[in-house]
Length: 345
Image (cartoon, rainbow, N blue to C red; front, top):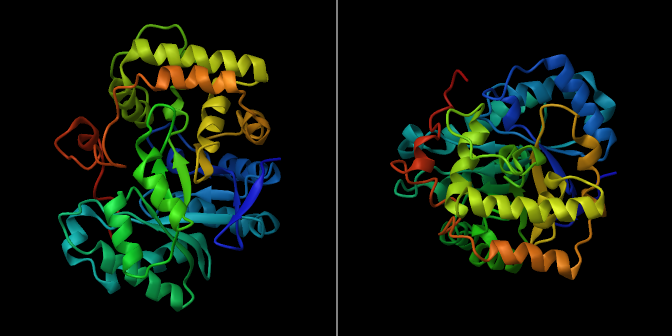
């Protein structure tokens, strides 16, 4: 079983969270019946936290249908969704806009109160992120939201929300053996304020796996959006040669632990300071047996030294959390979709 812990006092959290982005398109066809049956299997294995978003096309609705059709499983489930106003909407983002996003999520998920809502703000040059967080807090006071979190905020802006009195309980960030951006200032801030880090990208969209060990560097086009995104992270990390060194180290540890590279890569992040859970995108139960091993992984001093020996030579990614992705003219920013939260979505 996947281990569980509590954040913010009494909010239950499985240390492995089932990600929902892979069910939103761009990763192959999704059969709703199979997807809902798989959700039940994850919950039975102890994965009782699911991640989704208002902008993940069809995913809130799919989870809502699951909750209706599997009521006993739904009682054990906590759903983490997001509030992501469109880039083109930021300048006019007021209480009414935020309320409409939340009401739509409540309807899709078939819930009277959302368990966790995580705010994202595309462009800090457009003011309003503090006001948007305060709007969520007012909806929380009205009973529409249980807990408030954020996603992809940098240290300065998260500090501004805290200074404004918003009780932030979690922060969803990209964090992996390839991407160490949250390890310094962000981790310190989150520890000071008891904010749980929920980490995505721990398997780099599938690149941290045996299938990529000792193979030539792949060339675009790639099979899905995850591979496009995380190949850029590999390039920032130091390129394919250094990535192969890291894979070999992970593979050696995986063999000793009788598991696979992806499990070791996720467990390495789970062992980091302030990290409460890792988010693993799954379109099926094919890796579930390995996923539930996360809580059993223990790294020796030699394991940690071997990993650090490669990671200390990383060239990047550099900067604050999500700073590269905010540059819409850069390679990371150009692949983003900024306007998915339309009223008709």
